[in-house]
Image (cartoon, rainbow, N blue to C red; front, side, top):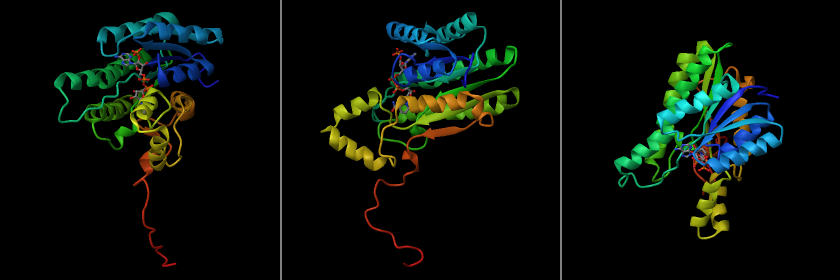
Length: 270
Ligand code: NAP
């Protein structure tokens, strides 16, 4: 078991990728502290994990509220005595032309995706440094949008790139104290967002043809694949890695253009 008895906080654990993260961490022996606003969904997941023999605690938390973040960290320490890992996964994906974005909309995305992640990182890192055997691993869930963009994504991209920026700074600051901080940037995953994309397309097959041309592996990322990448970053398997921004994207951000319409000449002239 890669996370035996490790106490791991996971935000946004009520839906999508966060559910898979909680389940995978619990299967690997972690005591998972799951945070989100949806009480019913969190409690359902908590009882599922407990029925499977795992240890879990759900905490209602709006990550944009500093008092909620403090309560989350205190609840984790009260229940399990320490914190070994954090996945800052809660996020809102906001799409609107940069020319139309209001100050309120900008602030809302920043409050959840960037400010919440930073201050929860700060609270967890303080706890990780003051406990017996100081150290820990913090994972920020950003996006392929930290590498390249799409139309209408300005606040989201600013927030996700901000996560990369502060993570590098905190990684450098805490590297010699045993706390590692990394970013994991997923590509297109099989979650609600995929359902929304399909719903907005003329047909599922046209939608899929388009994405096939833009994802070298020609497949969606399953939530468990992102959870497994988190597992790697949380565990000692990644002990030399800090300050990284790892793309989990089936090759999407390595692709220059979707298709080359004309065959290039070989350099050898053949
Ligand atoms: P999702 O299905 O929309 O779930 C988002 C989670 O964040 C939910 O559990 C939600 O819980 C929580 N959340 C939202 N606002 C919150 C707040 N103010 N306080 C606490 N929790 C909050 O999203 P997802 O697709 O699983 O994505 C998870 C993360 O991966 C996000 O950061 C997203 O940007 C990133 N990502 C996803 C994809 C993808 O293809 N799915 C690709 C790249 C990056 P409540 O509503 O219960 O609070």
